[in-house]
Amino acid sequence: MSSSRTGRPPVQRTAGRRPATSRSSRDNPVRRLYTHAQKAWDRPLTAYYLILGGSLLITVLGLVMVYSASQITALQLALPGSYFFRKQFLAAVIGGVLLFAGSRMPVRLHRALAYPILAGAVFLMALVQVPGIGMSVNGNQNWISLGGSFQIQPSEFGKLALVLWGADLIARKQEKRLLNQWKHMLVPLVPVAFLLLGLIMLGGDMGTAIILTAILFGLLWLAGAPTRLFVGVLGVASAIGVILIKTSPNRMARLACIGATEPRSGVADCWQAVHGIYALASGGLFGSGLGASVEKWGQLPEAHTDFIFAVTGEELGLAGTLSVVALFAALGYAGIRVAGRTEDPFVRYAAGGVTTWITAQAVINIGAVLGLLPIAGVPLPLFSYGGSALLPTMFAIGLLIAFARDEPGARAALAMRQPRFGRKRAGGPPGPRRWNTMRRRASAARPSGER
Image (cartoon, rainbow, N blue to C red; front, side, top):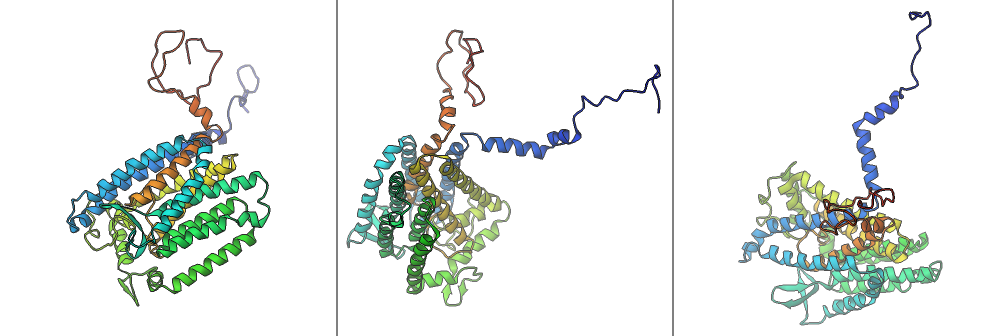
């Protein structure tokens, strides 16, 4: 062992050194990225920004794709190329007003609107079956003409009605401690849901009926329904569904087109399903370019409505379709987070119902385009063409935004925010106007002239 000049062994200084493992984990960029992402997810306003930003991005991208996918269809009908885009843009503007109104309404007003919206939806859905008032589109008697080229589909508002009314009903029964009895769990929720389903099925729209069924099961699951009730309701719904499918050659043909690779698959004509796959396959990684779709030139039916996701894949490629899926996934995550963190029963059930609605509809639409599910004829929420579907969906997004603002910690975080052009600083000269961040704390230790 070597010694120092004083004859003493050298002193090993290890007290000030940090372990190599902590330094490596600190310097690891993947670990740092994961830590920052985890902190971002845990912030009080994460759900608020995800719902607001995700829904707006989906709507804007949907407007772009509606304009691209609908031009050829409009020209074939001797209409201006921007005809469908202008109608969708008008619906988006009205929907934006509804979104803002829904996001600013207090919870008690949402609950007060539940019964009027349900009564209005039932009345309009019954009015559809009156000869001379109801209209048939693509074989489904589910439309009412408003004059000119404007139509309304009342069954779309039935989804919103079931969410609001069902959430208010279950919340009131929970407050009275009645949900531990099976009859209070099912009545009158299931009979009213079946009434809405019956009115929808009178018009032949099974796709919308499937979405309402998903909302019903979502509400029952959130209410804590036991397994035997789930099995009973699911058995009844499945039996009715099998009968409706077996008695309709059109629905049987749609089932036969699952996974089809040729336009003619046995006895079924799978033209739409197969050309949707062709559109996705020809898009590649980044697509053929915005507006450069080939399938929308008459090959792909309903290119701007039910199969707009296929045109998105052809023009924007895998990157574009994955972006749309990621936005819906973020929206679904935020809705689940709002429903899981609230203490208000109505907010929990309403947020869960809206999340089930949007997520189930997106899965059914995308699954049909991918050939994994039968074509149900439901639009992609916030994305496909159709004002009747866009308006109630945007109001439902407004509900989620309002609930996210009331999430624990979110209201305090929003209260700390200062408008960009806010008040002058008290007790000192005017300073730079800036946003207050969530990290800035109200400090008694700072000088009186600072915030």
